[in-house]
Length: 411
Length: 89
Image (cartoon, rainbow over all chains, first blue to last red; front, side, top):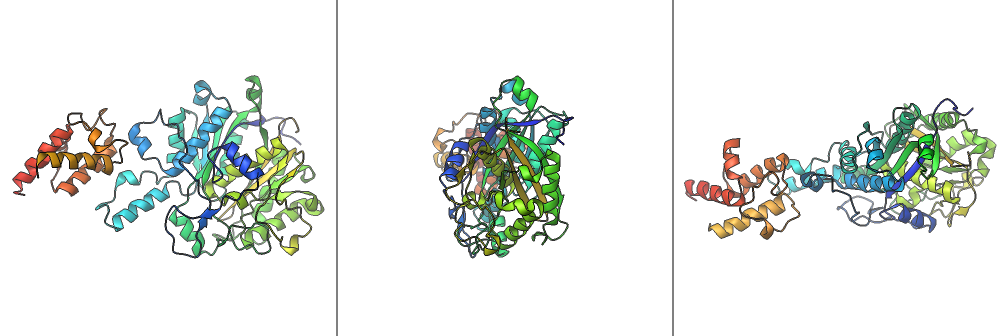
């Protein structure tokens, strides 16, 4: 049953900074064209097995008028990505200063300004700085990105930062949804942001989790994930409030579910216990039966383990209907943006619903033979009217979050 | 070290060491280094003390000395010159 007693949550603004470009338009165009943004790693040197990543290509415009110059100078790239995406989402939602003032922030990230901190260590070790420089390390706490956003855009609502590995910003969306449902705020900005850094790059490579070639989710030859970076932001709003002010509603957050694996620091539970529970909980929360799901935006990282477990999860929940549920992975185009992935993929899924365009999994040549019955969406995507979609994010340590999104007017 | 060269080095240290959006030559001699002048804050102050101490081998032991030394670029140049003179360098 739908949750008639709680408020409906609308998505009224979208923003994104990704390897496909500096805004949502660039993201949606690149996705529709089947572009793969994974290329040479240029941000830092790495001596391991892999040399590729999905880097944000250029400096993105960041609104800094309200930020003290000394603070603005020290923002990390992760802070700047978050700020650019948040500003775009607020513009898209038509939030003026008075509305922004009431807006809460929920942000997810995994390493934040780690790259700048690594650079401070490198400079110290290389003798370029004789002592550690505080000003180069101020982006270390994950909370700096949300602080920068609230300061730059004048958001005075409650502010929280989540770090649950690769589900961080999916959890931020879930938390923002709950805050609106409970009537604690009418507006919330859910953000995910992360930048490439040596720690994650070398760490994933050492774990042999990276594919030396651009990742190939669901392919029989897949060898791992590709790392990416960027940010995405969604303005979530009490649907009645959105309608009353005449805001355009992109989609609705119908429900969310969270569950843990309690199994291993990096490997998913072999039967996807937490992921199954999260997906079922999300559908129950949304009051949507599995039969009504038109599209699955998969976690689809491209590691041999993840994709196998994830297909098992989908089989467990969708059963004999699974061959009729289109599935694709945005990570084939943007790499895995870690803490940003949940929000980035939510934006992609919202636009898929609105545009009636299933995003493809690129680089998928020969699907794993065990999944011959699945509807794995390949290039060039597919036009089809969509009403309900789910998007899942599975983080290391078994942090599983699933969101159920619905097209405005269709649910 | 003559004053002109020292002044240029101090300005370069400010611009590059603190990563200011300002060319060294555009930093005025008499503007207060902190406060509204160059838009520097307390973290910059901490860093600048370290940078000046390292670069010019002078000691800024307390706030009183700091206030005097960082009153302006011109004051900082005089402070460094005096300290280095006292060290016999």
